[in-house]
Length: 254
Image (tube, rainbow, N blue to C red; front, top):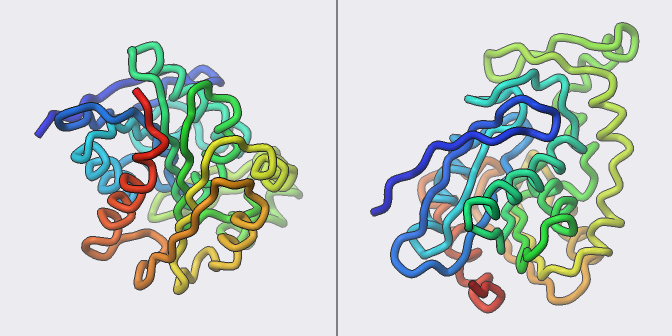
């Protein structure tokens, strides 16, 4: 089993972002970037388990913490959906500079929307897979709707997430509301795999249906029966990774 590599690279706004590269075991089938969920991070179960499984099947993956999360520098409140997309492109550029050109993008939840939006700006992307992604980035607003009044009154507000305080800023909310993912889906040339659980209580499966309908062929849909949104139950993330690995095989060329 290959040893994971800890790396840092500069974000599009300046602060350093921390990542982990899970190198492929055996023959290299391709390289990819994983975009994590809204406030989750590179070490969340979905990110870590999916990337490790893909690496075990020959697809090396970079997973990284977005601005102000996990081991990355900066303030989460200075980010936005636009920043997340741009830093996904930046992550792929970093990989290319290492001689590991990115062929696969995988995104979970909010990160799935970012992967779709980033795909057209990453040369060489041959396949995109989303898991539990919303068709509209502003779907994330349900996470912080309780503080929206204060955000618009004061320009920012403290928001508690998983026992930590994050600063939600007006520009973040406005940026997410402006994001037009549907046009990005329609414009995307890369083959798309849409994965979603029919019992996802965080992002309803109707989102997957809309993404699939907007996408061009080749497009595929896989129902992740029994999975929760965060893919925390034993085997769920690995199962998703095995499906991605098999589906992507016909598209990956190194």
